[in-house]
Amino acid sequence: MLLGGICWSIVYIELIRKGFKDKTYAMPLFALGLNFVWELIYSVNTLMLSAASLQGWVNLVWAMLDVVIVYSYFKYGREDFPAKAKKYFVPFSILAFAACFLLQFAFYFHFDSVAASKYSSFA
Image (cartoon, rainbow, N blue to C red; front, side, top):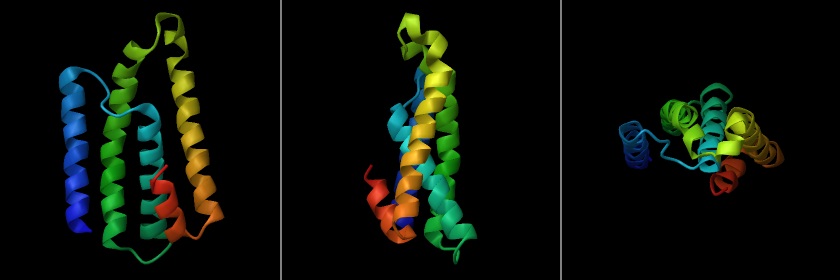
């Protein structure tokens, strides 16, 4: 579990490094939204609502790294929008993140937290 957490953290750090170097966001919007929400839900669930575990702390680290990737998305993502749609970048992005929250919460509230985390992680 710790090794997997370290490896994925290295991936996230590389996404951040490469994103700022190339002045772009390094993760597709819906992958970012679903990842970020998943990590928030299950770090809170593990660290605050049940017995804290190593996985909860790993999820929290990933969520904090995702905050930086979300920042890079909002900083650089507008450039990838079509010219006519640039003014809708922020509302569309907020709507996309909201949809990701709803989808992940649907899993969380439908299944017990262990099953929900496993099923929704593949979304």
